[in-house]
Length: 222
Picture 1: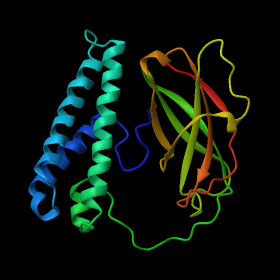
Picture 2 (picture 1 turned 135 degrees about the horizontal axis):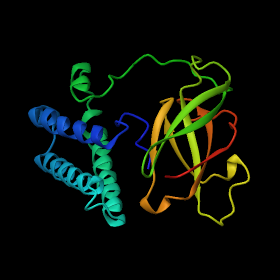
Picture 3 (picture 1 turned 180 degrees about the vertical axis):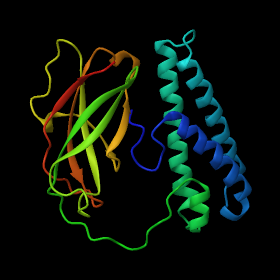
Picture 4 (picture 1 turned 180 degrees about the horizontal axis):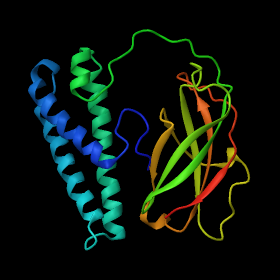
C-alpha cells in the first residue's frame, strides 16, 4: 500500500500524529464545523486501533503475518475515515486558511494554473527502506520538472511471484497510485516478501492527462 501520495503523511507514524491532531482541533471546533460527536468518537477509536496494530506489527515478539495484515487493515480504515471526514466537514463549507493549517493541510489555492498535456518522460529508482517496504525516487529522462503540466506522477506496478510470468511492457502493469512527490514510499503485504515488483511511471497533470511511459524497472521486495 502506498502511503499515500497526496495530503496524507507518507509514513504510518505521521498518519497517527495527524489523526490525533485532527481529533483535538476538530473537537474544539465541532460546533462551528457541524461535526457530530459520533464522527470524533469514530476517529478516536480508529486511531487507537491503528496505534495498537502498528505496535504489534513492529514488535519482534508479536510480529506475525496476521499482525502485519491487521496493521494494514487498521490504517486503511483510519485513512478512509480521514478522507471522508475531510470531504464532509472540511470542504463544505470551506474552512479558513488558518483552519487548514491547524489541521496540517495545505490551504486551497483559488488561482487555477494552466496545465497542458504532459510530455515529459520519467523513470523510477527504488531503494531499500525496511521489511516489506521500498522507497521510490522519480527522475526525469526528458522534459522540465517545473512545467505546470508535470503536476504529479502515476506509479504503475505489478507484484510477481517466483515462477510467474512478468509483465511484458508497462501497459501490462495492473496497479497504480498517484503521487505529487518525487520521493515516496510503497508498503507491501507480508506475503509479498521475496517476490519481484515491476514499476513504470507516467507524468500526470491535474486534469488526469498522462504523458509517455517511462522505462520499466524491477526490484525484489524485502
